[in-house]
Image (cartoon, rainbow, N blue to C red):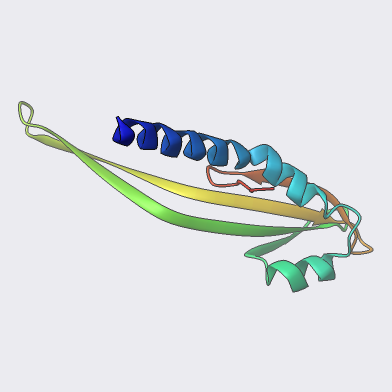
Length: 117
């Protein structure tokens, strides 16, 4: 009985903690950079993975984080075939700065763009 109660408590804590980690929180976090100087962003986040100069003179600074590659294999013994599937957790975040180096927009995509707060 005590083991069951402990298990339920641990599951409850896990659910509460996981509910705090969301992509909405990540969006809120990166949106705080709007209006900031891009040099301050680079000082905080480090050098970007890529910088794209847009035709209108703005620049897009992109940060890409990739981790936890998972490769799964399935074998079909009847057809003598093996299937492999690779899944990667990633987060690509872009900050667009105008010609005055002020961040005007933010975007992100990926499976691991999450934040605790």
